[in-house]
Amino acid sequence: LMAADVRLNAAALSAKTFITAANPKSVASAIWLLERGALVDKSVADALLVRSAAAADGWVVEGTDNAASFPFCGRYDTLRKSIGGRPVYRHADGEYDIWHDQVSRLWLLSLSRVAGE
Image (cartoon, rainbow, N blue to C red; front, side, top):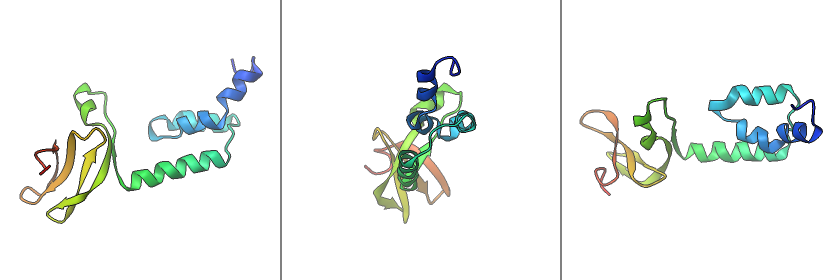
């Protein structure tokens, strides 16, 4: 299809398409786009740098094919509070926290109110 239509080819190889594909889950698509001449300009670098900086201030939990894991997936931001000297991470929807339990020495995922909210 890309070879048959110049507009479709331009859209498929645009910086916006590449930015969308440039993530761990679709790395094969991003490489495929690069091999076919995807436009990589300052907008791509800026978008990837912003994404990297945001990830440095928290965690991103990715799911599996198990539907039970989906409610816990997503971005967890670092909170200003800590438990036992370790940071607490809050899910973007505010419902879950990831925190370190000193007794069990495990990182736990719980409802936010359990972690002391």
